[in-house]
Amino acid sequence: MSPALAAGLQIAVVVAVLALIHLPLGDYLARVFSTTTDSRVERGLYRALRINPRADQRWTTYLVAVVAFSVVSILLLWALLAIQSWLPFANGTPNMPAAQGFNTAVSFVTNTNWQSYAGESALGYTVQAIGLTVQNFLSAAVGMAVVAALIRGLVRRHTDRLGNFWVDLTRISLRVLLPLSFVIAMVFVAAGVIQNLSAPTAITTIAGSTQTLPGGLVASQEAIKELGTNGGGYFNANSAHPFENPNAVTNLLQIVLMLAIPFSLPRTFGVLVGSAKQGYAILTAMAVLWGAALAATIAVQNAHPGLALQAAGAATEGQETRFGIPISALFSVTTTMTSTGAVDSMHSSYTGLGGGVLLLNMLLGEIAPGGTGSGLYGMLILAIVTVFVAGLMVGRTPTYLGKRIGGTEMKFAAGYLLVTPAVVLLGTATALLVPSAREAVLNTGPHALSEIVYAFGSAGNNNGSAFAGLSANSDFYNIALALAMLIGRLLPIALVLGLAGSLAQQGVRPDDSGTLPTYRPQFVTMLVAVVLLVAGLTYLPALALGPIAEGLL
Image (tube, rainbow, N blue to C red; front, side):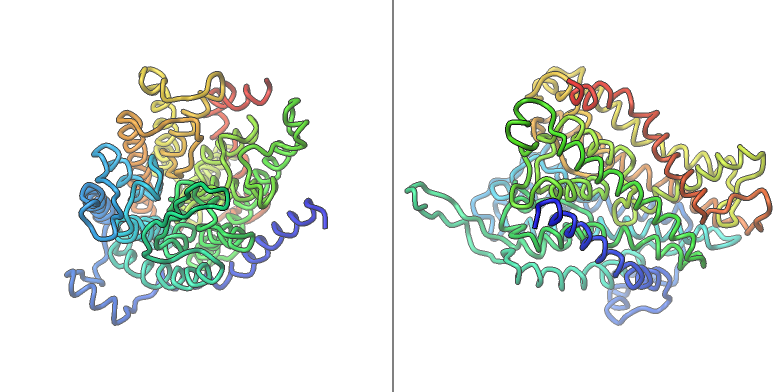
C-alpha cells in the first residue's frame, strides 16, 4: 500500500468515526444541557457547597460565577506549583518560580495549556494529577457551560435568566467528561500509554550510555488532555513522546478525541433550538474550513520547495516520522483548529507556508470546530455577524433564529471579534519593543516575527502550541502571555454572556421574505466568507511579513 493511500485511509477513518458519534454524542450533550433532574451525587455536592440547583442566574451573575471560579482556581494551582517540592511524589522537582507558576496556573485554568517548562523535569506527579489534570476537566467544562448559556439565550423568551453556572459545571464534569475520560484512559493503558507512580529510572543502554525513563499518571491526563481540547503534555515532547502516544492507533484516537465534542456540539445546538438543519449548517461551515486547512497544509508540506528539501524528498524536518507528513499535518491542523495545542510534530519546523496555515488556523478564532464550547460560541457569534451583513444588503432588520440582531447585539459581537486581535497584535508589538523579548527569539528574518506572532496568537486564542525557536521562559513572556491568556479567555466569555442575556430578553420575530434562511448553502457560503474576511483583514499584514514572506523566499 502506498503511503498516500495509507494516509488517505487513516483520514477517512477519522471522518467516519466522527460521523458515527455525531448524533449520539450531540443528543446526549443536549440532554445534559437541558435536563431538570439531578443525580444523587450531584445533590450531595449541591448540599455540601450550599448551591441551590433550581436558582436561575442573570447573565451578570453567571459571569461573576465564571470569573470567581477562574480566579480561585488560578490561585489554588499557583499555590500548588509554589510548594510542589514538599508534596508527595515530587521526585526531587523544585518549586516553580513565581512568574512561571503564574503563567502555568493561568494557562491551565484558561484551557490554554501553554507550557514554558519540560513536564518530566519541572513537575511532580502530585501537581500533575491534582493540579493540572483537574483543571483540564474544569476548564473544558467552563467552555461548554458558556455555550449552553448562549444557546439558552437564543431559545428563551422575555427573560433575563440563562441557567446556573454551578449546575452546568457539575453536570458537564460528572456526566460527560469524567465517564468518557475514564473509559478512554483504560483504552490508552491497554494501547501502551503508561499509568504509574514509579520514580524516574536510570538505565544503561546497549551503547553504554545512561538514559532516564520517566513514569507518571500519563494515561489519565492524556485522555482529558485531548477530549477537553486542553493540550498540555505530560512530557516535553508532548504527543511525540512514545509514553504519551505509543503507536498509530493511539495517534488516530487522539485526533478523534480532539474533534469529538467540538464537532458534536452543532448537533446539540440544532436539537436545543428545535431545528437540526441549523446545526448542520454550522457543522458544514466548520467542516469546510477544517478540510481546506488540512488540504492546504498537506499540499505545501509535500511541495517542499528549496534544494535541501528536494534532496531529502520531502519537508521532513520536525515531522512525526512514525506517521509521515499527511498524518503529521492531520494532527497539527486538528490541534490548531480546536484550541488543543497538543503536538506530535514541531510546528516551527514546517515550511514557511505550512507554519503559516497553522498560525492562521488559530487566528481564525479556532472555530472549525474550535475548543469544547468555545468553538461553537465563536462560530455562533460569526453567524450573527453574517446575518447582520445580509440584513444590510437587503435593507431589512436582521434576525437569527427569530431573535432581532440590533445595535446592542452587534456591540457584543463586534467586541468579541476585536478582543483577540487586539491581544495578539498589541502583544506582538510590545515584544518587538522590549530588548529581552527580542533576544529570546533564536531565529532571524520573517521566521522570527512568525515565532512572536505565533506565541501571542496561541496565548490569546487559548491554544497553547508554540514555535520552538522562542525561549518563552522569561519574566516578560511568562507574564505577558499569562495576561494574553486571561484577557483572551475571560473578556470574550463576558461578551458572549452579555449577548446571550440580550437575546434572552427578546421575544421571537417570525421569518418573512426579507429574512436570510440560516440553514441553506447560501448562508454557509456567506458564513465561511465572513470568517475568512474578518481574519484576513485583521491579520494579513502580520502574515505577509512573517510566514508568507518566509514561504516566498
